Length: 336
Image (cartoon, rainbow, N blue to C red; front, side, top):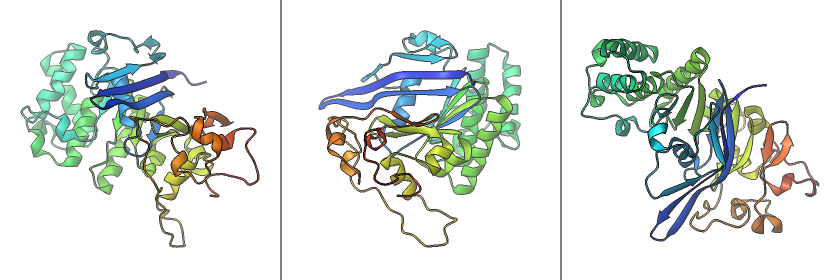
């Protein structure tokens, strides 16, 4: 049995605003095993990034975060003080952000930013930190690494900056890397290279990865398990095979239908999901996807479904999966 590295139980995050509380994350539970890659997918605004920023304690002061527990490497970090958590952040848990240009300081050289990170957490000499930083840049495919150490972020291309961010995230050899849309602003060939780097790190260093994305193709390439988020909750979780070939939630079906299939011999129009995501200032009582769903029943409008077991390690928050739901026709991701 695989050992949990991170286990989150009933995480909730809301933001206090002048017009009310925005309930961005409404009670999610998830886990990541040691050496595993977990994908978290969903539309923009569904709570993917906020949930991970909540775990990392990187949200603004108007955010209120609660949970039953957040266990990382057998330590409860949910109520850990900021001073204590600073020893973990960037050291044992690292994060790669969407836009490296806003994450890197334009006033400092790449070398300064990488070695500062290492000296703070590992308390090693500047020379040792410099040598390791050069090695990390080489590991992520940056040529002339020593020369690059003396350059500034604006002297790097978008893909190179993202490689620098990955090098910074692994320099302390963390147990967990959270990658928040790491390939969003990059072209397809650079995307593939970045994914190859993450895969390589996962295998060589046995690092766990949480990949946040709206791109199902990227998740399929890297992750063995996937959580699908919508309206601040997890609506389906399972292995990559379960999600792609035997999904049980109408929202997951909608996501899959909106992705082109390069193997299809028939030209098909992509089908967008009609309607708008829910207003999280006033979250719905029932299933958040009900107003956009083709299979909405009366129970869906007033009662939020729990995550129901539909297979080994496979759960879906849909009343269609309930044991008393009508089973007049087989419903699955491949047949809708």
